[in-house]
Length: 99
Image (cartoon, rainbow, N blue to C red):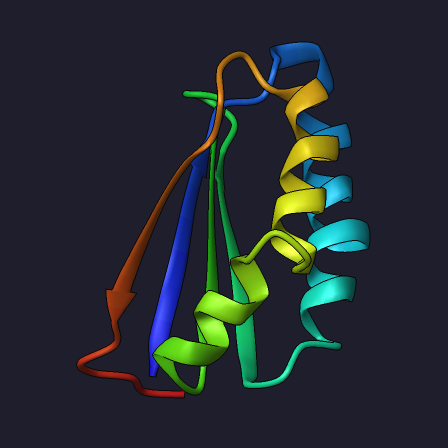
């Protein structure tokens, strides 16, 4: 299993809009992708930070969701209007998982 981690800092006055966008744009589209295994959104209102974690069955599924025709690129472009600076994205192999 693989994870995409997106770290973002929304504009203070757009924090709730950014959270809603994650739910309506990213999560909704991710559910339709092959290999999608779940999503977490961690928020810290004090530091104005969002950390989104999407889980994927395989590395290839993760890559496919992020390619130029995938949901992630179009979603991140729309999400940018809420942010102070561009979101940072990293990928990881999931070594342990307990659900």
